Amino acid sequence: MNIRDSLCLAALSMAMLAGCVSSPTRAPAVPVDPVQAQANDQRRSDIGDWTLSGRIAVSNGKQGGSGRIDWQETKGRYSISLSAPVTRQSWRLSGDAAGARLEGVDGGPREGADVESMLQATTGWDVPVRALSDWVRGIGAATAEYGPAKIEYGAGNLPSRLQQAGWLIEYQDWQPAADGPVMPARLVATRGQAKVRLIVDQWSLGAGQ
Image 1 (tube, one colour):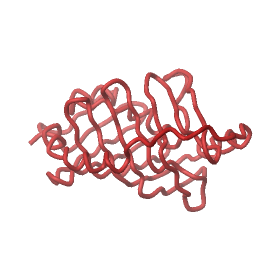
Image 2: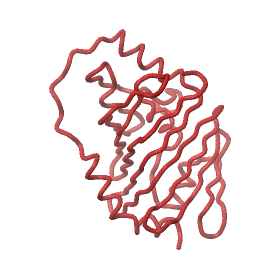
Image 3: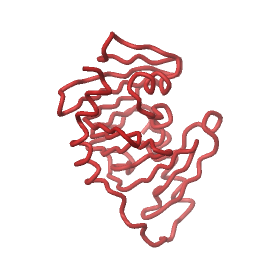
Image 4: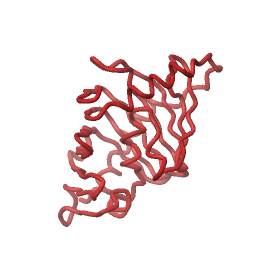
């Protein structure tokens, strides 16, 4: 069974997850302190090494799947472990700016210089892995690569919406992290038919916090 079929069998789990993070009604605008908002952004941007664990759901408009996710970033290198609860399949995506490697798929590991292209060709999912490493922290990705980020702020001077590179990221909940700033707890990233939902159960912040 390949990774695409395995994730499709996890659609029921995705539906349950989607119910947990359904988009709330837009709240009325709240006063925002731009100085405090910028300070909050800088604290999250300064985090160099971090780990998150939680649940992820992806869909492309026709097919969807979900599972557990453990994501670690250390010195510019990422390691992402995924597991589908229904099929008990697991995969590991690792890499850095030079390229990526996907393990656990039929036919053996896949490697490529462009992680997004490799992942879409192998699984059918449009997941902006490199930009998400910034978006999951509530900050814009590198302007040189993704263009300027437009950020809207809400309660607590924290981002409520971020638009960049054709993606819309909606921050639905935040949580305090031990010995660090408040971090995103629930977010949804969409572009066209592509959608990525993420619930973070726990953050662990390393150097640079």
